[in-house]
Structure formats: structure tokens, C-alpha cells
Amino acid sequence: MHAFDRAQTITAYRFRIPPVIWKLQRFFSLGFEGELKGHIRKLNKLFTEIVQTRLEQVMKDVDQRSQDDFLTLFIKSELNKGRQPSVTFLRDIVASFLIAGRGIYFLYLSSALG
Image (tube, rainbow, N blue to C red; front, side, top):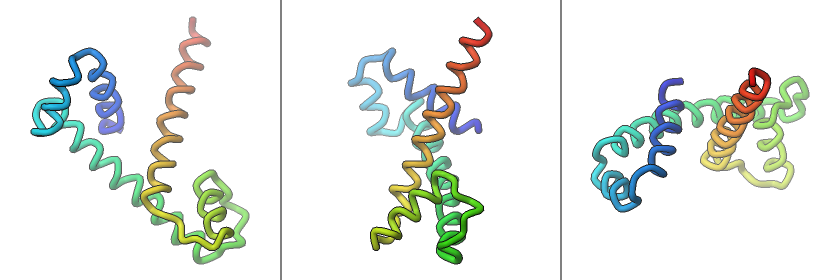
């Protein structure tokens, strides 16, 4: 997941330079900020495909128990409330879980090795 790695690296780099510089670069899509937009576009596309595929699977069989992962649980929760799940909301949840899980994974590895 090169796009994921680069997006995290570029976002962290923002803390090392004055905000006015990276905000100008973002506005004009220059340098790392232009690269970041491309990576975020790729990640949004990937996460949206994941959500749409799972949403289609859940809509075909709402009572299915074999695939109760976190995404399916969020979808079913929305359906039980009588609401159509938002693909954008679910996409952002997938991204958040991947970012959080990755941080925990590396924290665990560094503490186990250190």
C-alpha cells in the first residue's frame, strides 16, 4: 500500500514545516501536497470499492451472520435504524480503522522488540 504509506508520511511532514507553506502548496497542488492529493484519491477509490462491495453483499442477505465484521455491523446498524448507509461515512470508517490498526500494530512490534 504505497499510497497509504506516502499519505501518512506527507501528513506527518506537515508538522515539520510552517503551516503557511504547506497550505499554499495544498492550494496550488504543488510538491508533497500535490502528491498527497493523488494518494488520497487512490485510497478513497479503494475504500469506496470495499464499502460498495460489502454494502451489496449485505443488501442481498441482511440476516447473514457469517460475515459480521466491523463494516457489516455498521451497515446493519444503519439499516436497522431505517436509514440508507452513506458510502462516504462508511469509507471514512474503513480508513479510520486501518489507520488506527496500523498504529497499534507498529506500537506492539516496537514494544515487543525493545
